[in-house]
Amino acid sequence: MNVGVKSRSARKTIRPAGARTSVRLCLLDGFSLTCGEQTRSLSRGAQRLLALLAISDRPLNRAFVSGVLWPDSSERHASAALRSALWRFSQPDDGPATVMASPQTLALATHVEVDLRDAVAVGTALVSSGSVPEAVDVSMFTSDLLSDWYEDWAAVARERFRQLRLHALEAMCRLLAANGCTARAVEAGLAAVASEPLRESAHRVLIDAHLAEGNVGEALRQYESFRVLLRDELGVEPSALMEALISRVRGR
Image 1 (tube, one colour):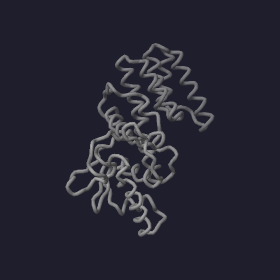
Image 2 (cartoon, rainbow, N blue to C red):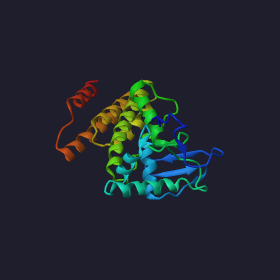
Image 3 (cartoon, one colour):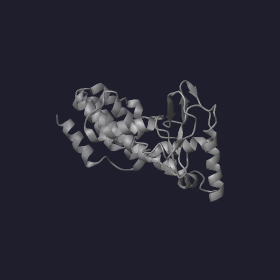
Image 4 (spheres, helix red, strand yellow):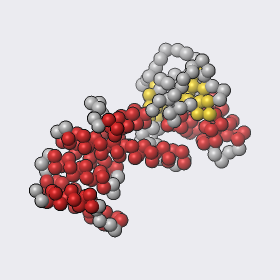
């Protein structure tokens, strides 16, 4: 995800310039902001501001930000709340810059690393390129985005990322199995199934990974487990695609 900040001259960084310290914002499986080795303590408003800016791939209009973050407040009070959150980032002892601001827009500072953006970039590459990056790890796709945040904007972003990470895990499982990396393929398939137990496509790629290892018994056991779960939870049977796969297995 590209921050999209194009004009530094039209935007000021909220903090005096100084020695660059690594800054990392984590949004997967909870919120944290670290500057070097230190974890910063932020108000809820400041956390929400950083999260919204990190989720966006472009600078956001100030009025839009205040309206999204404080939807039940008047325009005046929402603007005041936004100014208060921004003031927190302008204090001299508050660590490296995290927000870039112009009179009209706000964006996350370009040097801030974000785990969500890393995962989205790798996940998109996995789904679209047909290859597995060497550095990719299953753990990158096992956590939800801000799982305990209930604001509408966070819920929408969480569902969008959930779909990407599930597709990424399935693609990883399929590609690794095709390349003979069956142990890692099974690991990715198990992660996909654990993330969404009722997702049939996850069970199918896991079954294929077991078959790639030559473990027909594991494949059939996975199918039976899914069939019982689907019947108990939803009262339906596996799809024709799944039944065709299992028919081929049993016909070996």
